[in-house]
Image 1 (cartoon, helix red, strand yellow):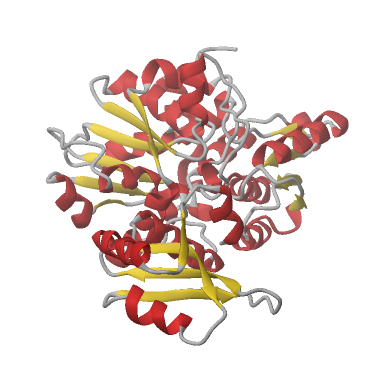
Image 2 (cartoon, rainbow, N blue to C red):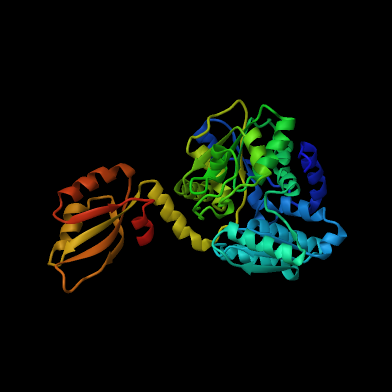
Length: 415
């Protein structure tokens, strides 16, 4: 396979031309204040399909021969790549099928159909991207359709790399650091290839969700390996195994990989919405989460964060708020064993809880043949440090109280 170069990215940019939007590069006053230096946001959430993925998909499909086009195309996606494929199929009049994991938000499914119209067919199945990918590749082998890889193909990588080329064309002051989300590695690889050839002293930081650190594990192992489990919350980057093509590029050209907790991503999604007016999906908030957490220092030039996508389902915001509150130490859960006698609950309310501590969940199961009954109690506090005094009052109480810790089986089972 020929080696990818910056020229491939430049050629892809010419191929895309007016088919994609030249998305804004905007100064974030909030993040700049945190960093004490300019932080720019590349708004690919405003791209066609609300994600940078259309760049790679269109570049790939537009290079197919007439013979290849006649067999149609097929892809697997958590949603954004599928929208890019749907757009390309409609523009180029090519029939396509997309295999989506069952975890794909409904909003993305509707958008895929709206974008692709009669040129696209959706097939839902499997619990992860990797299962959908296996099904899509099997279909490609059986039918002769062309499999459009979401990240591990030179044409996809080159197309995705056009994002960073555009950034440097737009920036009035040359960026010194770029932060990109990593799932399978296509965006990071395309970014690194173009930046290293044109601005080799620029720092490139890749960021992964802590629950799906597939690139970091590959770097530790010296090769791509499949993670035994993946937290699918950051669905746009929840990939169990990085690409065989993308891995060596990221290994050799990206300066470092930073993991961020899913709860911190949720907090940043809320901040992007409330402070910056940006509706970001979880993967779209990964890069700026690095800045918000103070995991990068100011450089002698702007830092660019790629807001990779904005396809977020409104039904997910309850979970986003919940994860954020738990991560920030503002929401805690307990199993409280109440004696079945008058005044037990009143004691908990009067003697255990204090000002600034509110019950946000109370589920009580009464056992008529027992002297005690368990309750699941969620408590929200106004400042994280208040948890110390709350735990002291619980310890002094005659009630049996067990704190449920995040990331434990009991916590995930009950909530």
